[in-house]
Length: 364
Image (cartoon, rainbow, N blue to C red; front, top):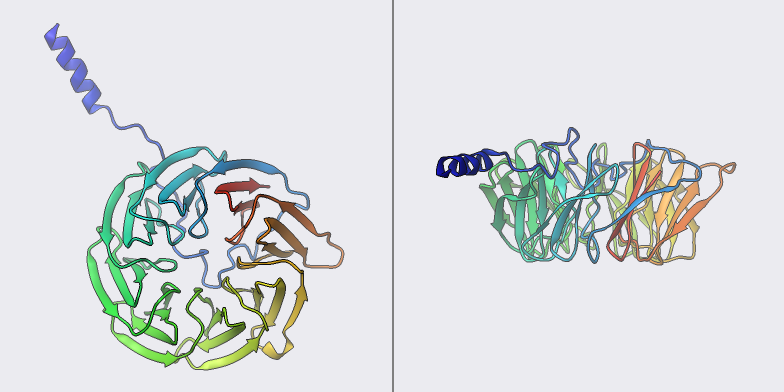
């Protein structure tokens, strides 16, 4: 009988742990809003009258936009929880308490999820188990993280840029920069670009050497959009500016007259930006003097989302509005408990957005 019991114990011990998430997701989400232009939905279409598929509760709010794979939706809540949901149903796959309040949206590299917190923790988590693979304590993490082929880049306040081995978390280098850094790192070729309160820096991604530093004020709140040879920032001081990606010289600047709290988005050779007072600006990338805008009369904090046949705008009041791309199209909107602080994303026809009460909504 003792032999039988011992055999049973061994059998239980040798049984593989129950999979609570996929082994890997075939499509990485390796950058803030996925693409350099911060317009991941630019080629996507949305049904003329979409219907709700599911709603899931994640926490009190969201630290950044989600990472969306083929099978999962990953979110970092502001109340120190990283969570994975099934894309098809909204079923919660796992949740993990991280070290401090979330300060950035997560990234996904196929098998690992990366996140950062305001308490200064950077971590990699297994997509399958929802458990830490590694975690490192640094300064308070500011803005989105960035992934290269081999490294994870993070900004710590007041002014330090870090590069970690993305597999094992080993620190590769760190660089102290002048001023307070808030915008997070942006990968641009062989360099990482980051903004302080009064400067923009190019830092070599391989060794952390400062390549160039240029004085520019008012850029530090938001990561920039990248389009060809241009880096485009929107400013809380009420302007949009394009810098040359090679030498950081100014290409053009457009005054909007009101603060912009979200990043710009670039699609179809046009820069889209939304002011806090509800003006939606369209700035031709190569003819900024022809910029136009429409006033919606609502308060907006989130970045606009260009789609193939129009534009999605999320408001502080909790409205999600689709502005048509042609006069023949009708305007569509839905309201949830606001505010909506993160840009909505349309991915393969699925609309995913988050609200101010910590819920994720999926429509199609």
